[in-house]
Image (tube, rainbow, N blue to C red; front, side, top):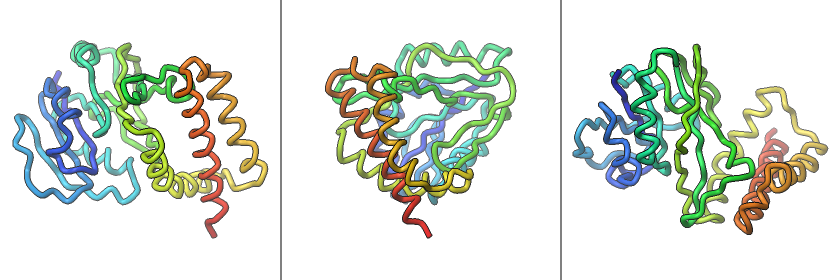
Amino acid sequence: MGLTAVILTNKEPKDIGKTLDPVSFADEIIIISDHIIGSELKHPKTTTYYHSLNSDFATQRNFGLSKAREDWVLFVDDDEVVSRTLADEIKKAIQNENYSGYHLKRLDRYHHQIIRHGETGKIKIIRLARKTAGHFVRPVHEVWQIGGKIGTLKSPLIHERGELISPFIDRMAFYGPIDAEELTREGKSFSFWRLLANPVGKFIVNYKLKLGFLDGYLGLFQAYLMSVQSLSVRVFQWQKP
C-alpha cells in the first residue's frame, strides 16, 4: 500500500523543512500552501499547490485528498512533526487491511516541554486514512468522517507551539469569528449563561479534572488560555448581528 503525505501550510514551502523532512518516507508528498508560492520546492516526490484557505479548513483538506495518488493519505500541518517511531507505526498500519483509518495522538510542545495533561494532552484526531474512506466536514476544527474500522496509533504527533502568548492571541483572533459562526450554525445560540459559565468550566476541567496541574506552571497557563479562548468565542458570537 502506498502513502501520500499532505502538508498544509500558510508559509512558503521552503520554510517547512522541520515538517517536510520527517515525512520523506511517504511515496508521495503534496504541499498545499495558502501563501502565494514564490518558487517551486525542489524536493524528491514533492508537488506544491496554491489553494486559498478562505477560512475553510475542511475544503483545504478535501482538496488535498483530491490530489493524492496513493491508497493512504497522511495529513500534517506545518507546525507538526512526525517522529521516527510514529513513522514506523504508520508504515506498518497502512498494510493492515482491516482498518480504514487511524487516530493519532497529538501532543503540544512548548520550548522542549510536552503538555501531557489537560484538554490538549488528550487530543486524538484522524489524520491517517484510506483516500476513499471519507471526507472532511466543518470549516474549523474540521473532522475527517471515515467509514469503516478506525484504530489508534501509539506514538504521538508532536505539535510544535513555540511561544505561548503571542501565537495564541493570533489564533484566537483568527479562529474566534469562525468558531462563533459555526456554533450559531449548529444551533448553539449565544447566552449570557454560556458566556459566564463555559470559560470557568473550561478552566476547572483542564486544570483539575484532566490533571493539567501535573504539567506545572505550563499546565496552569494552558488551562487559563483555553478558558480565555472559550470566552472570546462567546464574545465574537455576541458581536455578530
